[in-house]
Image (cartoon, rainbow, N blue to C red; front, side, top):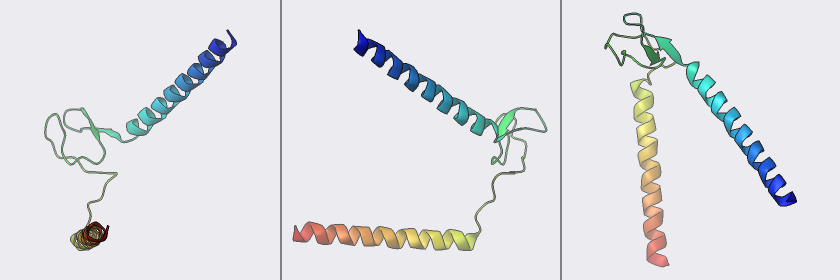
Length: 95
């Protein structure tokens, strides 16, 4: 009987924690929602066009990456991937 009560209490705490987490996630998402000036549909603040009517939106929470930064990031990612592949080949050959 006592084990069942403890199990029920743990389950209730878990459920309350999960509900609180879901509420925080929902509130976080809602803070990024804007309305389309043309049709009034909801869209996320980083979108460049309305998903319903296709009207142009000005992204407010997002700034596109400039080309120089994008190229640098791509080069670093390629170099890191190459190092990982070489290391995997070396490990495979010697083990």
